Image (cartoon, rainbow, N blue to C red):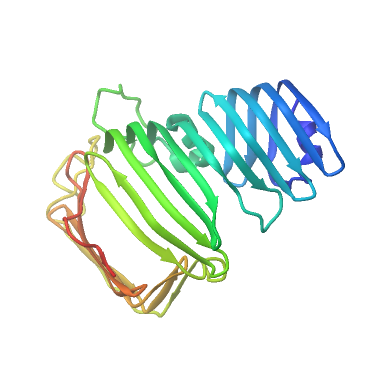
Length: 345
Protein backbone atom coordinates (compact mmCIF):
# COMPACT_ATOMS: atom_id res chain seq x y z
CA UNK A 1 0.00 0.00 0.00
CA UNK A 2 1.07 3.57 -0.78
CA UNK A 3 -0.58 5.21 2.25
CA UNK A 4 2.04 4.37 4.93
CA UNK A 5 4.95 5.19 2.61
CA UNK A 6 3.48 8.57 1.71
CA UNK A 7 2.83 9.27 5.38
CA UNK A 8 6.58 9.05 5.98
CA UNK A 9 7.75 11.23 3.07
CA UNK A 10 4.91 13.79 2.59
CA UNK A 11 6.37 16.15 5.17
CA UNK A 12 9.88 15.78 3.76
CA UNK A 13 8.84 16.80 0.22
CA UNK A 14 6.73 19.68 1.53
CA UNK A 15 3.27 18.36 0.57
CA UNK A 16 1.61 17.48 3.89
CA UNK A 17 -1.81 18.71 2.71
CA UNK A 18 -2.00 16.00 0.01
CA UNK A 19 -2.75 12.31 0.54
CA UNK A 20 -1.79 9.41 -1.75
CA UNK A 21 -3.45 6.01 -1.82
CA UNK A 22 -3.46 2.78 -3.79
CA UNK A 23 -1.75 -0.59 -3.88
CA UNK A 24 0.33 -2.59 -6.32
CA UNK A 25 3.88 -3.61 -7.16
CA UNK A 26 6.92 -1.36 -7.52
CA UNK A 27 10.30 -2.55 -8.81
CA UNK A 28 13.30 -0.20 -8.79
CA UNK A 29 17.00 0.04 -8.02
CA UNK A 30 17.69 2.48 -5.18
CA UNK A 31 21.09 3.92 -4.28
CA UNK A 32 20.97 6.03 -1.12
CA UNK A 33 23.73 8.50 -0.34
CA UNK A 34 24.11 11.06 2.41
CA UNK A 35 22.39 13.82 0.44
CA UNK A 36 21.02 12.05 -2.66
CA UNK A 37 18.73 9.19 -3.60
CA UNK A 38 19.24 7.72 -7.07
CA UNK A 39 16.25 5.67 -8.28
CA UNK A 40 16.73 3.69 -11.50
CA UNK A 41 14.60 1.25 -13.49
CA UNK A 42 11.29 2.20 -11.91
CA UNK A 43 8.57 -0.21 -13.02
CA UNK A 44 5.33 0.23 -11.09
CA UNK A 45 1.79 -1.07 -11.55
CA UNK A 46 -0.66 0.60 -9.17
CA UNK A 47 -4.34 -0.17 -8.63
CA UNK A 48 -6.90 2.34 -7.32
CA UNK A 49 -4.39 5.18 -7.28
CA UNK A 50 -5.66 8.34 -5.55
CA UNK A 51 -4.39 11.85 -4.81
CA UNK A 52 -6.58 14.08 -2.67
CA UNK A 53 -5.88 17.59 -1.49
CA UNK A 54 -6.77 21.24 -2.13
CA UNK A 55 -8.85 21.43 -5.35
CA UNK A 56 -7.63 17.91 -6.23
CA UNK A 57 -9.47 14.58 -6.30
CA UNK A 58 -7.55 12.25 -8.62
CA UNK A 59 -8.49 8.60 -9.13
CA UNK A 60 -7.04 6.08 -11.59
CA UNK A 61 -8.24 2.48 -11.63
CA UNK A 62 -4.92 1.30 -13.07
CA UNK A 63 -1.70 3.28 -13.40
CA UNK A 64 1.66 2.26 -14.85
CA UNK A 65 4.84 4.24 -14.14
CA UNK A 66 8.28 3.78 -15.71
CA UNK A 67 11.51 5.79 -15.57
CA UNK A 68 14.16 7.01 -13.18
CA UNK A 69 14.74 9.92 -10.82
CA UNK A 70 17.26 11.68 -8.61
CA UNK A 71 16.26 13.24 -5.29
CA UNK A 72 18.84 15.82 -4.18
CA UNK A 73 18.08 16.57 -0.53
CA UNK A 74 20.94 19.04 -0.19
CA UNK A 75 19.80 21.01 -3.22
CA UNK A 76 16.07 20.54 -2.44
CA UNK A 77 15.43 19.25 -5.95
CA UNK A 78 13.78 16.32 -7.74
CA UNK A 79 14.94 15.58 -11.29
CA UNK A 80 14.25 12.95 -13.93
CA UNK A 81 15.75 12.41 -17.38
CA UNK A 82 12.70 10.46 -18.52
CA UNK A 83 9.43 9.49 -16.88
CA UNK A 84 6.32 7.82 -18.32
CA UNK A 85 2.87 7.56 -16.75
CA UNK A 86 0.07 5.60 -18.45
CA UNK A 87 -3.50 5.51 -17.11
CA UNK A 88 -7.06 5.40 -18.38
CA UNK A 89 -7.62 9.11 -17.76
CA UNK A 90 -4.13 10.58 -18.14
CA UNK A 91 -0.99 9.54 -19.98
CA UNK A 92 2.19 11.61 -19.96
CA UNK A 93 5.83 11.43 -20.97
CA UNK A 94 8.28 13.80 -19.28
CA UNK A 95 11.86 14.59 -20.26
CA UNK A 96 14.56 16.53 -18.36
CA UNK A 97 12.19 17.43 -15.54
CA UNK A 98 13.39 19.46 -12.55
CA UNK A 99 11.00 20.11 -9.64
CA UNK A 100 12.01 22.12 -6.54
CA UNK A 101 11.26 20.57 -3.15
CA UNK A 102 11.27 23.93 -1.36
CA UNK A 103 9.91 27.41 -1.94
CA UNK A 104 11.97 29.67 -4.17
CA UNK A 105 13.10 26.97 -6.59
CA UNK A 106 12.32 26.86 -10.30
CA UNK A 107 10.76 23.98 -12.23
CA UNK A 108 11.79 23.05 -15.77
CA UNK A 109 11.23 20.31 -18.33
CA UNK A 110 9.22 19.05 -21.29
CA UNK A 111 5.93 17.21 -20.99
CA UNK A 112 3.73 15.50 -23.59
CA UNK A 113 0.29 14.64 -22.25
CA UNK A 114 -3.12 13.17 -23.07
CA UNK A 115 -6.24 13.64 -20.92
CA UNK A 116 -9.72 12.12 -21.23
CA UNK A 117 -11.77 15.16 -20.22
CA UNK A 118 -14.94 13.19 -19.45
CA UNK A 119 -13.03 11.59 -16.54
CA UNK A 120 -10.43 14.26 -15.82
CA UNK A 121 -12.99 17.03 -15.27
CA UNK A 122 -14.06 15.25 -12.08
CA UNK A 123 -10.50 15.52 -10.74
CA UNK A 124 -10.70 19.31 -10.43
CA UNK A 125 -14.44 20.09 -10.20
CA UNK A 126 -16.58 18.77 -7.32
CA UNK A 127 -19.88 17.08 -8.29
CA UNK A 128 -21.97 19.93 -6.88
CA UNK A 129 -20.25 22.36 -9.28
CA UNK A 130 -20.52 20.19 -12.38
CA UNK A 131 -24.09 19.01 -11.72
CA UNK A 132 -25.70 17.31 -14.73
CA UNK A 133 -23.57 19.25 -17.22
CA UNK A 134 -21.39 17.10 -19.47
CA UNK A 135 -17.84 17.76 -20.62
CA UNK A 136 -16.09 15.38 -23.04
CA UNK A 137 -13.16 15.24 -25.43
CA UNK A 138 -9.55 14.11 -25.60
CA UNK A 139 -6.97 16.77 -24.82
CA UNK A 140 -3.47 16.16 -26.20
CA UNK A 141 -0.59 18.60 -26.17
CA UNK A 142 2.94 19.48 -25.14
CA UNK A 143 4.25 21.77 -22.42
CA UNK A 144 7.71 23.27 -22.13
CA UNK A 145 8.87 24.98 -18.95
CA UNK A 146 12.22 26.77 -18.93
CA UNK A 147 14.10 29.49 -17.07
CA UNK A 148 15.94 32.59 -18.21
CA UNK A 149 17.72 35.45 -16.46
CA UNK A 150 14.41 37.07 -15.50
CA UNK A 151 12.30 34.12 -14.43
CA UNK A 152 10.20 31.28 -15.82
CA UNK A 153 8.82 30.83 -19.35
CA UNK A 154 5.91 28.47 -20.07
CA UNK A 155 4.86 27.34 -23.55
CA UNK A 156 1.83 25.08 -23.88
CA UNK A 157 -0.17 24.02 -26.92
CA UNK A 158 -2.28 21.27 -28.40
CA UNK A 159 -5.81 20.39 -29.36
CA UNK A 160 -8.99 18.87 -27.98
CA UNK A 161 -10.53 16.23 -30.24
CA UNK A 162 -14.31 15.68 -30.16
CA UNK A 163 -14.87 18.53 -27.69
CA UNK A 164 -18.35 18.59 -26.16
CA UNK A 165 -19.97 20.78 -23.51
CA UNK A 166 -23.65 20.05 -22.89
CA UNK A 167 -26.09 21.63 -20.43
CA UNK A 168 -29.28 19.50 -20.28
CA UNK A 169 -32.82 20.82 -20.09
CA UNK A 170 -34.27 21.07 -16.58
CA UNK A 171 -37.77 19.57 -16.69
CA UNK A 172 -38.63 19.44 -13.00
CA UNK A 173 -40.95 21.93 -11.27
CA UNK A 174 -40.13 23.35 -7.84
CA UNK A 175 -41.19 20.98 -5.07
CA UNK A 176 -41.56 17.94 -7.38
CA UNK A 177 -39.31 15.10 -8.37
CA UNK A 178 -37.87 15.42 -11.91
CA UNK A 179 -39.12 12.86 -14.40
CA UNK A 180 -36.68 10.63 -16.25
CA UNK A 181 -36.68 11.23 -20.00
CA UNK A 182 -35.06 9.24 -22.81
CA UNK A 183 -31.90 10.86 -24.15
CA UNK A 184 -33.63 11.53 -27.49
CA UNK A 185 -36.80 13.04 -25.99
CA UNK A 186 -35.56 16.63 -26.07
CA UNK A 187 -32.74 18.89 -27.06
CA UNK A 188 -30.20 20.17 -24.49
CA UNK A 189 -30.50 23.74 -23.25
CA UNK A 190 -26.93 24.41 -24.43
CA UNK A 191 -24.62 22.31 -26.59
CA UNK A 192 -21.17 23.25 -27.91
CA UNK A 193 -19.40 20.62 -30.00
CA UNK A 194 -16.15 20.87 -31.96
CA UNK A 195 -14.34 18.17 -33.94
CA UNK A 196 -11.04 19.89 -33.13
CA UNK A 197 -10.42 22.76 -30.74
CA UNK A 198 -6.86 24.11 -30.84
CA UNK A 199 -5.25 26.05 -27.99
CA UNK A 200 -1.90 27.64 -27.14
CA UNK A 201 -0.39 29.71 -24.35
CA UNK A 202 2.94 31.43 -23.84
CA UNK A 203 3.55 33.03 -20.44
CA UNK A 204 6.56 34.42 -18.61
CA UNK A 205 6.91 35.09 -14.90
CA UNK A 206 9.39 37.75 -13.74
CA UNK A 207 9.91 37.15 -10.04
CA UNK A 208 12.17 40.17 -9.51
CA UNK A 209 9.53 42.56 -10.90
CA UNK A 210 6.59 40.44 -9.63
CA UNK A 211 4.91 40.47 -13.04
CA UNK A 212 3.25 37.89 -15.30
CA UNK A 213 3.36 38.53 -19.05
CA UNK A 214 0.80 36.80 -21.30
CA UNK A 215 2.52 36.84 -24.68
CA UNK A 216 -0.03 34.61 -26.40
CA UNK A 217 -3.26 32.90 -25.45
CA UNK A 218 -5.38 31.47 -28.27
CA UNK A 219 -8.39 29.19 -28.70
CA UNK A 220 -9.64 28.30 -32.17
CA UNK A 221 -12.44 26.10 -33.46
CA UNK A 222 -15.09 26.16 -36.17
CA UNK A 223 -17.47 28.27 -34.05
CA UNK A 224 -15.04 30.77 -32.57
CA UNK A 225 -11.52 32.17 -32.56
CA UNK A 226 -10.13 33.90 -29.49
CA UNK A 227 -6.73 35.56 -29.07
CA UNK A 228 -5.48 37.51 -26.08
CA UNK A 229 -2.27 38.97 -24.69
CA UNK A 230 -1.44 41.21 -21.76
CA UNK A 231 0.09 41.12 -18.32
CA UNK A 232 -0.43 41.33 -14.59
CA UNK A 233 1.62 43.53 -12.27
CA UNK A 234 2.07 43.15 -8.51
CA UNK A 235 1.22 39.49 -8.96
CA UNK A 236 1.88 38.37 -5.39
CA UNK A 237 1.54 41.62 -3.44
CA UNK A 238 -1.68 43.10 -4.83
CA UNK A 239 -5.04 41.88 -3.57
CA UNK A 240 -6.79 39.43 -5.86
CA UNK A 241 -9.93 41.49 -6.31
CA UNK A 242 -10.80 44.85 -4.80
CA UNK A 243 -13.63 47.20 -5.71
CA UNK A 244 -13.93 50.74 -4.41
CA UNK A 245 -16.70 53.31 -4.63
CA UNK A 246 -20.41 52.96 -4.16
CA UNK A 247 -23.37 53.95 -6.26
CA UNK A 248 -27.08 53.24 -6.10
CA UNK A 249 -28.17 50.96 -8.94
CA UNK A 250 -31.68 50.69 -10.32
CA UNK A 251 -33.50 47.50 -11.29
CA UNK A 252 -36.98 47.23 -12.76
CA UNK A 253 -39.20 44.51 -14.27
CA UNK A 254 -42.50 44.96 -16.10
CA UNK A 255 -44.83 42.51 -17.83
CA UNK A 256 -47.29 39.71 -17.05
CA UNK A 257 -46.44 37.26 -14.29
CA UNK A 258 -46.81 34.25 -16.66
CA UNK A 259 -45.69 34.02 -20.26
CA UNK A 260 -47.87 32.96 -23.17
CA UNK A 261 -46.60 29.36 -23.18
CA UNK A 262 -47.60 26.43 -20.99
CA UNK A 263 -46.06 27.08 -17.55
CA UNK A 264 -46.11 23.33 -16.83
CA UNK A 265 -44.36 22.41 -20.08
CA UNK A 266 -40.83 21.04 -20.22
CA UNK A 267 -39.34 24.15 -21.85
CA UNK A 268 -38.99 27.64 -20.41
CA UNK A 269 -40.17 30.45 -22.68
CA UNK A 270 -39.65 34.12 -21.88
CA UNK A 271 -42.72 36.21 -22.73
CA UNK A 272 -42.01 38.94 -25.33
CA UNK A 273 -44.03 41.23 -23.07
CA UNK A 274 -41.46 41.00 -20.29
CA UNK A 275 -39.13 43.98 -19.95
CA UNK A 276 -36.37 44.45 -17.39
CA UNK A 277 -33.33 46.63 -16.87
CA UNK A 278 -30.53 46.87 -14.33
CA UNK A 279 -26.95 48.03 -13.93
CA UNK A 280 -24.03 47.95 -11.52
CA UNK A 281 -20.92 50.12 -11.44
CA UNK A 282 -17.85 51.00 -9.39
CA UNK A 283 -15.34 53.82 -9.30
CA UNK A 284 -12.12 51.82 -9.05
CA UNK A 285 -11.15 48.15 -9.03
CA UNK A 286 -8.17 45.81 -9.12
CA UNK A 287 -8.83 42.43 -10.71
CA UNK A 288 -5.93 40.05 -10.02
CA UNK A 289 -3.43 42.90 -10.34
CA UNK A 290 -5.09 44.50 -13.41
CA UNK A 291 -6.20 48.08 -12.55
CA UNK A 292 -9.63 49.17 -13.80
CA UNK A 293 -11.14 52.63 -13.53
CA UNK A 294 -14.81 53.53 -13.38
CA UNK A 295 -16.77 50.65 -14.88
CA UNK A 296 -20.45 50.15 -15.67
CA UNK A 297 -22.17 46.83 -16.37
CA UNK A 298 -25.76 47.03 -17.60
CA UNK A 299 -28.39 44.57 -18.82
CA UNK A 300 -31.72 45.14 -20.57
CA UNK A 301 -34.41 42.54 -21.37
CA UNK A 302 -36.79 43.17 -24.28
CA UNK A 303 -38.59 40.79 -26.69
CA UNK A 304 -36.92 37.76 -25.07
CA UNK A 305 -33.42 39.15 -25.65
CA UNK A 306 -31.01 40.37 -22.96
CA UNK A 307 -28.69 43.14 -24.16
CA UNK A 308 -25.45 43.15 -22.14
CA UNK A 309 -23.12 46.17 -22.10
CA UNK A 310 -19.80 46.63 -20.28
CA UNK A 311 -17.84 49.87 -20.46
CA UNK A 312 -14.61 50.80 -18.71
CA UNK A 313 -12.77 53.89 -20.03
CA UNK A 314 -9.63 52.84 -18.13
CA UNK A 315 -8.49 49.20 -18.04
CA UNK A 316 -4.74 48.82 -17.44
CA UNK A 317 -4.06 51.77 -19.72
CA UNK A 318 -6.61 50.64 -22.31
CA UNK A 319 -10.37 50.66 -22.76
CA UNK A 320 -13.02 47.94 -22.49
CA UNK A 321 -16.19 48.11 -24.56
CA UNK A 322 -18.36 45.01 -24.90
CA UNK A 323 -21.87 44.79 -26.35
CA UNK A 324 -23.48 41.37 -26.63
CA UNK A 325 -26.90 39.80 -26.47
CA UNK A 326 -28.40 36.64 -25.02
CA UNK A 327 -31.29 35.07 -27.00
CA UNK A 328 -33.30 33.40 -24.25
CA UNK A 329 -35.96 31.75 -26.43
CA UNK A 330 -33.55 30.32 -29.01
CA UNK A 331 -33.28 26.51 -29.01
CA UNK A 332 -30.64 26.11 -27.70
CA UNK A 333 -30.13 29.45 -25.95
CA UNK A 334 -27.59 31.61 -27.81
CA UNK A 335 -25.06 34.23 -26.71
CA UNK A 336 -24.09 36.51 -29.60
CA UNK A 337 -21.02 38.76 -29.61
CA UNK A 338 -20.70 41.03 -32.67
CA UNK A 339 -17.39 41.04 -34.52
CA UNK A 340 -15.07 43.86 -33.52
CA UNK A 341 -12.68 45.03 -30.84
CA UNK A 342 -13.46 44.37 -27.19
CA UNK A 343 -10.34 45.84 -25.54
CA UNK A 344 -8.17 48.61 -26.98
CA UNK A 345 -4.74 49.30 -25.56
